[in-house]
Amino acid sequence: MKIKQFLAAFFVIFTINQSFSQEKKFKIHTVAFYNFENLFDTINDPITYDEEYTPSNGWTHGNYKKKLENLSRVIIELGTDENPTNSPVVIGACEIENRRVLEDLVKMPKIVDKGYKIVHFDSPDKRGIDVALLYQEKYFTPTSYINVPLYIYENGEKNNKKEKEEITEDTDDNVEVDSKTKRIYTRDQLLVTGYLEGEEINFIVNHWPSRSGGEKKSSPNREAAGALNRKIIDSLYKINPNAKIITMGDLNDDPTNKSVKKGIKAIGRKEDLKAFDMYNPMEKMHKQGIGTLGYRDSWNIFDQMIVSEPLVRKDYTTWTYWKAQVFKKPYLIQNEGRWKGYPKRNSNGVPGFSDHLPVYLYLIKQVN
Image (cartoon, rainbow, N blue to C red):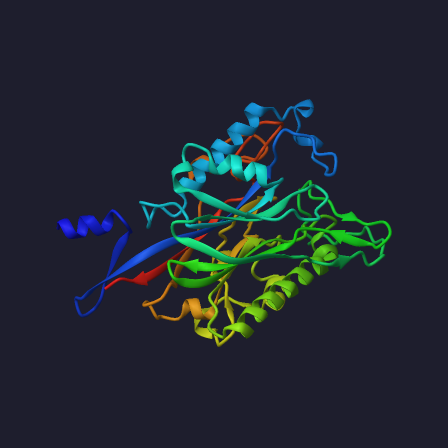
C-alpha cells in the first residue's frame, strides 16, 4: 500500500478492468486548448487596434486582473475529472494580445506552482491577437518552434449579399486588408516540437480567419488555413512516418466544414483511419449537438483537437490518445441576459471567462 501511495504522489494511475480479470495501470496527461477571448492588458499599443481594451474605454487594471483570475481557475480545473492531481501539461491558446499577458497569467496564484512556460510569437493580425503554447517544463521539453504565416488575399469581389443559410459570426475580429498588396492579415500557425517525458510530440496551435462577412464568402480563407495546416502535418510525416501530432485551435469552422474535411483531411471515425491520416474526435461530438460556442440558439464546435493516426494506435507502451471532451462547467455559462445559456463572455467592460468553452484530451501510457 505504501508503494502505491508513493507512486500516486508523482503521477496519476488509473486502471482498466480486462475480461480476463487482469488490471492494467496507466499514466495520464491532459492536453488542452482554450480561446482566451480578448486577453488584453490595459496599455494602448499604437501599432494595433486595442483601444477597446484600455482604461479610457472602461478596461481597468481591476478588470484585467479579474480576467486573469477567471482564466487561471479554468486552467487549474481542466481535465481533473480523470486526472485529479494535475492541470494540463500543454495548453494551446489564442486571442492573446502579447507575451506580457501570458507572463501575468502564469503567475496567478492558482497556477503559479505549475511552472508554466511560454512559446509565443507576435502575429501580423491587426488587432494584435496571437496564438501561443503554455507547457509545464517538468513534463514537456520543447526542442524547436516556429510560426508559419498564412498568406491569403482579397479576391476583389464586392458582393455583400448573404444567403439565408449563412452563418455570420458575431465578432469584432474584422478582416484587415492591405490596400496595396490586398493581403488579408491574420494569425500565424504555431508549430512546437518537443519531448513529453521522453517521447517526441508535435503541437500545432491555430486561430483561423473568422466568418466576418458571412460563412460562405469567408470560407476560402479558412480553406487556405486548412491547406496550410495539412502542409505542416505532411512535412512532419515526411520526417517521421510515425509522427505524433496534435493540431488544435479555434478553426472558426465545424468538423464537417470543407476547411477541416478537405483541408486537413480529418476523419471522424477511428475505424476508417489509414497511415498518415488525422483523426477528429470532435466530429462525433458535433453530430451529437455538443459545442464550444453558441450562436442563434444553436451550438458550433469551432474549437477542435485533431490527432495523427500514430496516436490512435492501441500501443499503450507509448503515449496514446484516450478521449477528448468539452469543458462545460456551470460557472462558465451565462445564466441571465442576452447571452443566457451561452459561454460567459466579456460583456460591457465586465470581464467574463470566454465566449468559447475550452476543449481537452487525455494521453495515456501503460506503466506496468
